Amino acid sequence: MAIIEDIDIQRKEEFSISETTHQAIHQLLSRNFSGYPKNQTYFKQLPNFRYLVWHQNQLIGHMAVEHRLMNNDDQIIRTFGIADLCVDLDYQHQKIGTFLLQKVEELGRNNFIDFLVLVAKDQQLYLQNGFQTVDNYCRWLWIHQQKTFGVIHRYLNHSLMVKSLQKKEWRSGSLDFLGYIF
Ligand SMILES: CC(C)(COP(=O)(O)OP(=O)(O)OC[C@H]1O[C@@H](n2cnc3c(N)ncnc32)[C@H](O)[C@@H]1OP(=O)(O)O)[C@@H](O)C(=O)NCCC(=O)NCCS
Image (cartoon, rainbow, N blue to C red):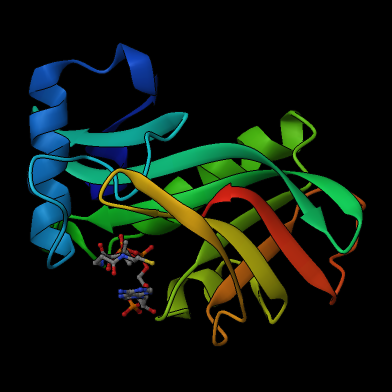
């Protein structure tokens, strides 16, 4: 049986996630992202909701989602920001990552979300799933170790990616995250 038929995918609001599950999320994130903040399940701030992938009571996949208004060159857009997408090493290359992206895309399309937005150095998975790389001059809230330091303005070195879900077109001018970067 393909693994995709044998997994359980949950969408959980952040406030409803138990301490035990947070521990499992932290362990998965720490294994996949070197230097992940100690005892945390977020880099900068809590997301709005997460997708959790379970196989036989083991957490094997994760994706955090931030529901955010952004200002794209004076066009106000409703976005889902994707963060901390990861799949346990033993389960990679079986389309679980792709399935998670499809889930959030379907949710966004059905709920008038204009764009999926993410930042990624390795873009392979996202290009395969219809994202495009964009190069906007960006502005975001600078948060470091749970303190606000100010506002950063800069380009993101070809790592900003978006996918349009409705009729709006992405503009090439500025992008104001209207908050922290995920
Ligand atoms: C990226 C990741 C979530 C993909 O999960 P997955 O279930 O293996 O994804 P899929 O099977 O749907 O697709 C696999 C494709 O993703 C691409 N890919 C592999 N590693 C990747 C990475 N780190 N970032 C982006 N794309 C990646 C490859 O093109 C791969 O194709 P292949 O199977 O033909 O080699 C998984 O490799 C992972 O957890 N990596 C470590 C954490 C990470 O780098 N996350 C991305 C943060 S932006």
